[in-house]
Image (cartoon, rainbow, N blue to C red):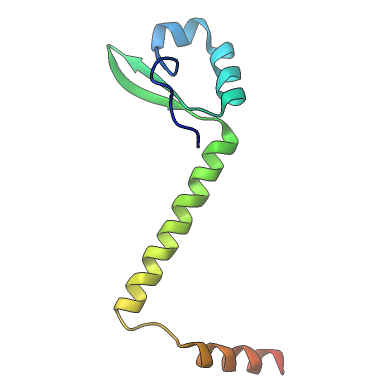
Amino acid sequence: MKRINLEKDIKPLSEFRANAASFVQTVRKTKRPLVITQHGRSSAVLLDVEEYEALIEKIELLQEVQLAEQQIKDNKSIDHDEVKNKIFKIIDR
């Protein structure tokens, strides 16, 4: 995901309401998120769908890596030769 441009990508809710279609088009074109503020504080983020999906994929991958690291730490891993033997048994059926 592209980095936010602090000068261009933070808009108050009132401005977003008045120009929603334009802001959505900008987010889709630039691939940068838009931070929407309410009462001077950040309250929501508008993301391009493709950027959102890529972000979710990265999070899921990191969660899988974290789970694998925990399984290794808990001695729940399987060594290479054991996996290879299990796969060959399945293939040879």
